[in-house]
Image 1 (cartoon, rainbow, N blue to C red):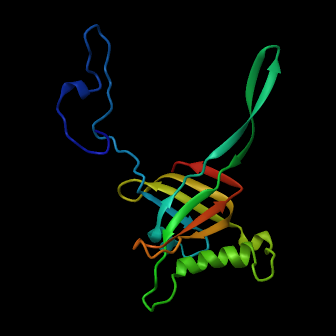
Image 2 (image 1 turned 180 degrees about the vertical axis):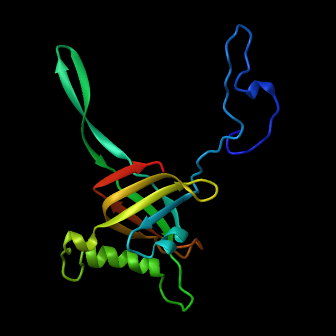
Image 3 (image 1 turned 90 degrees about the horizontal axis):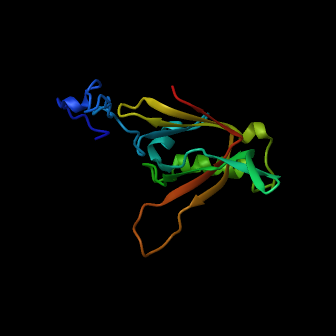
Length: 190
C-alpha cells in the first residue's frame, strides 16, 4: 500500500518475477511514499513567512487555464492551444490573537499589504508595482520536510482579503481567506 513501509518477502514483488507464458511482472514497490495534501509550505518573500507557514491551513495550487482555438476545415473542427492565464491561488489562515491580546501580526500584515500597498483605500489608488508585487513560493513536502515540488509565483499581489463571517450560532475558529494573483508560476522539482 503506498505511503506505508511494509516489508514483504513475497516473490511476486521482485522485479524479475516471471508469470506463466514468460511475461515479466513488475509491480509497484511496497516502499512507495505518496505526496500528502497536508504537507506543504507557503512563503511570501519579504514578510513574516514563518508565521504564515504555521497558520495557513488550506491552499490551492497554481493551475493554468488554456483557451482553445478552433480551426474550421470543411466539416472538421481542429482545436489548438491558444492564450493561457494562471488561475488565482487561494489560501486560508487562522485568525489568532497575540499573547498581549492584540491582533494577529499575520492578519495585520496581509491586510496592510492589500489595503495600503495594492489598493490604498484612504487615497483610492494603488502604489507603484515595485511597492506591492512580491514573490511567493508554494512547496509540497515529503515526510521529513524536504521540498518535493515547488511553485514560484512571480509578481504576486493580493486581489482579495476575505475574513470569515461572524455569528452567534457557531464557535468555530475565525479565519481569513487570501486570493493571490500572479503573472507566472514556475514549477520545479528539486
